[in-house]
Length: 391
Image (cartoon, rainbow, N blue to C red; front, side, top):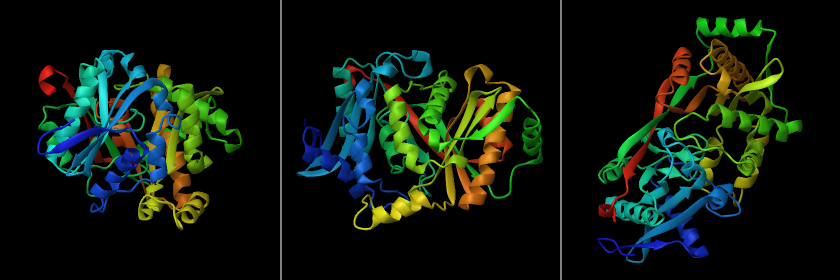
């Protein structure tokens, strides 16, 4: 496949090309002081069938861009069968494919890659693109468009600021805005929030407990099932399969700390949760994508004795039947406050990030504003109809 300016687009079909697909991100982002090189082994798992359960319900094609024989970019094109089955009014739905994992040397390269992804999706009978999503909506959705001046936290994307213009120049329009909130945690929350928490503590029907690593599989399943229920009406929602829930639990177990993940129970039934993770990016940034020769020892030490200046809250949820109630807000404030106390005491944490949050999720936006959090990062998900003229 040949594009303009002698840019050649090749589908990834060999192990050598897979390695090139991984390596190009490190080359193109080498001069960005805020890019955190992910561990190459983790990227390999993400894009390998049999190691990432996303492939069990998705069709995926990776592409490389070459110029004068040198790799100058990459992109993934993919179709999630579970996303196709969702109602169209929730963002995904029939005919919707995705691309992501894009890296490009320049605008011409980006355009050639996106055209290749669009052509592949069209050949697979897709009529609409929702992008970038890398690769599942549960992994890294959206393009970073605000917050380039500081490094991303664990499991968050970081992109060249030029990408926004390059993508929008191809006729992509914004489908949804996702934000993350910066939250100082040293000094506690406003008096109103403290009163709400104190009121909840007097409610004998309500109990907030830590997860128990001795029963990790049980608690991981409780959290993920609550997540599937709590987020089921959200824009962009795609249900997690049992295998994905199991895979996520195993992947996160090394950085799970009992005092940072809480479950709220109402009369003994789990009804809400909040997951907080130490920012492992603080530990891996200097490793430049490799655990060798000494990175593995440093990482193991950090995992066992983490002192993390920053924490991220990637997930929280309240059982659907309780959402929009006063009790739901109260439980969320209690979860946040209990974890804040332990993060500060046990990990030396000074700040947290909450997100992603849909910009029109009024309940979560109100909670973020009540605890005086401020938006520090923005991700945009774009959409575009696939037509003959795109080819």
